[in-house]
View 1 (tube, rainbow, N blue to C red):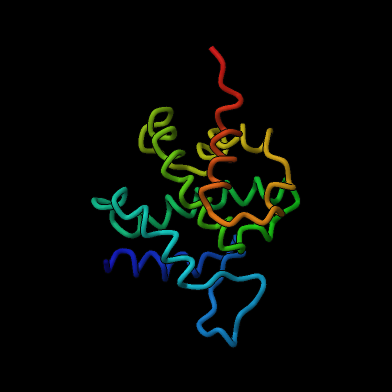
View 2: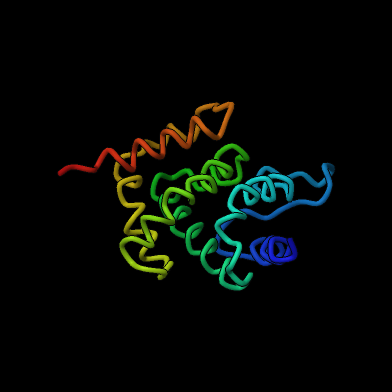
Length: 154
């Protein structure tokens, strides 16, 4: 667990995206996610990170979030990442994207490699998907998966 705590601290200092946390409910901001949202989003990924040092985890997840944030900016829905459902969906989608990165590029989790794998999402997702009121990250995750697989052909 110390690696997760370190990762949490490092990612919350990550300045190129808009996912900053707030400590108390009274400090709640519409452009930030809570520590609880962040931790709940990271917990399902812990098994993927068992043998990785925390510095490497920070770089990998940071690169993934930079690439996904680029998609959101291109769709003109930059602030969608601070929606707890959207953020959890994005983090769960990492489990689908990471093996594709490893298949294509080995263990090189650079931003450009994430951009390359996420291109079908950028091309097929509509901005309105991020404004819908989803009750579960699973629904949005299904939309991401459909968009990723829609460009596949033999």
